[in-house]
Image (tube, rainbow, N blue to C red; front, side, top):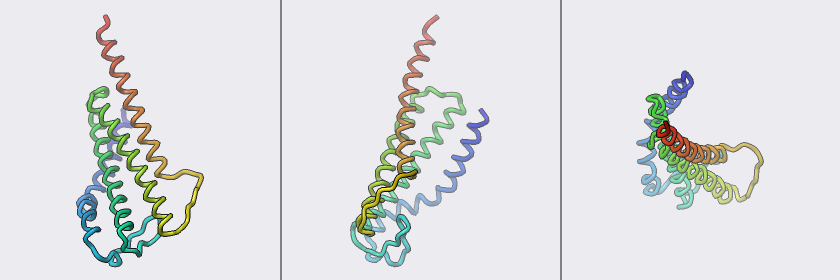
Length: 168
């Protein structure tokens, strides 16, 4: 049970460090569309500086910020799940639904990140690349699918636990 305290401390640290970014991210999404010139800000996506003020570049920036917010919300849900685990409420309905929601959010976040990366590379670099290897976007999608599977496992386990509690 010591490991869960370490995990909770790490997740809480990431949460606390990320909190100041949230208001700026929320304000930045509509602000991006109202600004005429993005040249005042150095915005890099995939290591390439954005110099275009096109609507597509603004949409890609907004989707990237939205992806961050989705990931941040999944971190919030994970903190809530860890709190339930510390209270030994492992098979609670909140835990099961949170795992499923975390999975959905991470899959959506990973897919959006892949789409932004692909469109960005195609539009700004004018090339299509395919790389074999580990990519954080693919790993995020895998974690999302893992959390969805974990939700199903917990749902089945909860049913078996309730059935076991009813037998004498």
